[in-house]
Image (cartoon, rainbow, N blue to C red; front, side, top):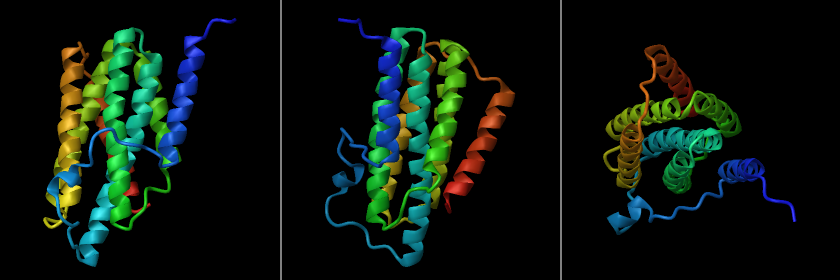
Length: 214
């Protein structure tokens, strides 16, 4: 019997992840954050519902990209230990993906129509980061997660005060992203050069601005 090829297995796993992500079939391991609130869902005005839907669509796009980034970086990781860490972080991001999908349904809104494009672009970026070496790949994780933390903080400021369900999701996501960044720093991340940080921020602005509407 032929021996299994680890690279082939990893490629198949990456393809399956892409299909699950883009087919909106993510399943969370942890409970939905809004379940801890108890009671009924908040009643929002049409304007509040529209704003929450747009912001949660942007957050959902971020989680689509996170699936792609972690999959690509796990695929290119040199050390098995780092590959395991990337996959563990990706499991948290799968929870986030499922939570934001669920919240979009509750708000009567939809994911971005450009999710296949976002996924493909993020996967390519993750491959580039991974090929640069494990320390630089970890550095990319740190910078990405710190930027996401800031982005989620602005959403907490912008979400309607009455939308406690969306706020609960975003707050837990923010905690998890900070934990991922801390873990990558402790694992020996190399700092990301300033021009790369600026480029990442510019790309994020384009993505979030587009996903707000499309």
